[in-house]
Length: 131
Image (cartoon, rainbow, N blue to C red; front, side, top):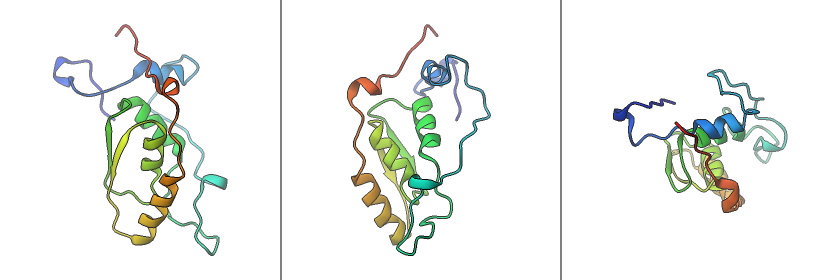
């Protein structure tokens, strides 16, 4: 994620205050630690095997979208896979475009996203600071 306070950087979003608020009011650093995608979040096929080999944790995409988008923005994922980006985008009130060539993953992503309920408006407020 690239962020700038430079005038040339206009049009880019970096929600510093929202990230700080989600990190016990401490500035977010560049190293983020997330558990791997396991348990109930991990999508499985009919045989009980991982549906997609590189499924990302929803918490990772939620942090990225919180940092770099606002409700109503459009998020592009050119390697959509199991639809984590689309599921999180829908939950956070963002629109998305996903590109995927494998029909198995497309079907799973559509089912996954259809089950997501967006957060209510008050839960989508992006904090802004004095910067």
